[in-house]
Length: 218
Image 1: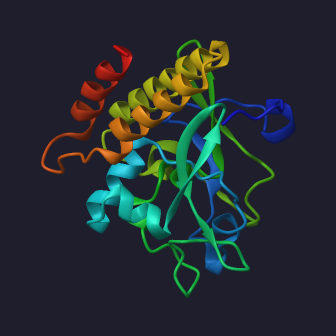
Image 2 (image 1 turned 60 degrees about the vertical axis):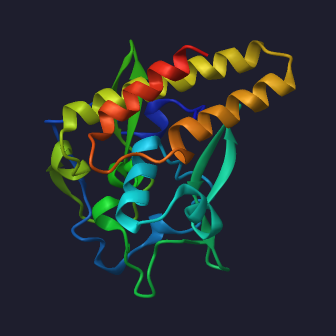
Image 3 (image 1 turned 120 degrees about the vertical axis):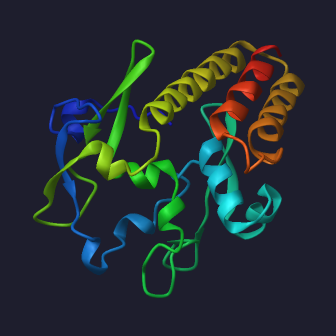
């Protein structure tokens, strides 16, 4: 999702790599869950997020869509996001004690917060969002530890390739005048990357790149 703001407005003005230290550690959040409510449709799920949820919850994408996930249009592309529920607009995976019930397999955006990604030159760097987290007295933590994702190099390559793949689809859609083509393209992407089950006994990234190759032929 694009944000039409400058880094100077929302960050400390620095760009970071995975091995850098950044003042983002919220010290266990201490019963705060502000970033888990009133987030609208901003917690967008990538294919790995969907794979993790389906595998760990033992649910299909269609079952997740019944209560936990919804669709939205992001820069012309239909993508899933976590649903906010109730008057308090809480994340659907937040339990009654205000704690994340899927913390070990939470989505990438949740792992990243309060960091963001700045994309350029077919890669990305991290930046610290200075206005997002309300917790005081945050401490420094290595970004790789904060993100807490196995095989980080593979993950970062996946994030990069998925971002620029979507950017290419966005450019295609912006040039198209055929609503039927746009609808079919979106439905094919949803089916290929989200609805079609992944084999939990096989490496996710191998399966993803096989699907990406298929999608690029279209």
